[in-house]
Amino acid sequence: MTFTAENVQAALMPRSVRFYARVDSTNDIAHDWLLAGAATGTVVVADEQVKGRGRLGREWYAPPGTALLVSVILHPRLEHVPFITMLGALAIADAIEHIGGLSTSIKWPNDVHLSGRKVSGVLPEAVWDGGTLRGVVVGIGINVSIDFAGTGLADTAISIEPALGRPVDRLALLVTLLNRIDYWSQNINKVLEAWKGRLTTLGKRVSFEQESGIVQGTAVNVDEQGALLVQAVGGEIYRILAGDVALGGEE
Ligand code: BTN
Image 1 (cartoon, helix red, strand yellow):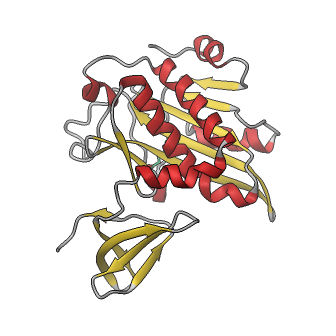
Image 2: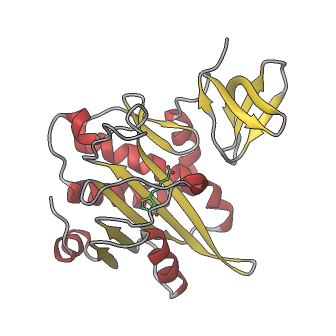
Image 3: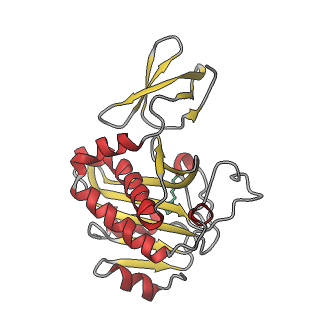
């Protein structure tokens, strides 16, 4: 389904929506719109991003028309901010399952996986005015029909269409995604447990980087903030709040 300003706006009525055929980053537009007073549930959608960004300063790869590139504005209470990333990942996992009946999982903290490869990611950006939280922009990228062959992501990324074996209606996926974001926003107290239940990382061998070098251990739990608790080979427990963990490692 080709996106146009008209069909995106019509599908998302009565939300406030901005659609761009091409933009630097939907998160930047949403950031400015939030500061200008945009309400919860306001959405920015693009068909192409020139400066799409991922977590940890990475670039977000998505050729024009092959992905869902969305930023949603939310106004959570301060104490709920740690759950926003989880909420995004849960909504994505739900939406992909609803659309295609595919089974998804979440790799800590917020990568949604299909058949063991990353199909989507979440980039939440809190917007502050001095010490006051003005809101959060939840940036979401979902690989719908990206062909990763010949790219550096060929072994780690996947799109929904090849996994499903049929075309995906991006508009229907977008509507479902936003409905699930609404649902989890209204059920924020259930987010931590639901997210934890979908995490594939728990119980697995993982490795991660510390100043002292690479540490290996087992992901034993997450805490109430969503931080990953890893028991290192020597028995010490590490609390990882942000960053990357790699699955696997020496036994
Ligand atoms: C990740 O690294 O896993 C998060 C990727 C988030 C990408 C989305 S695409 C829409 C929004 N705009 C951006 O520039 N990034 C997010």
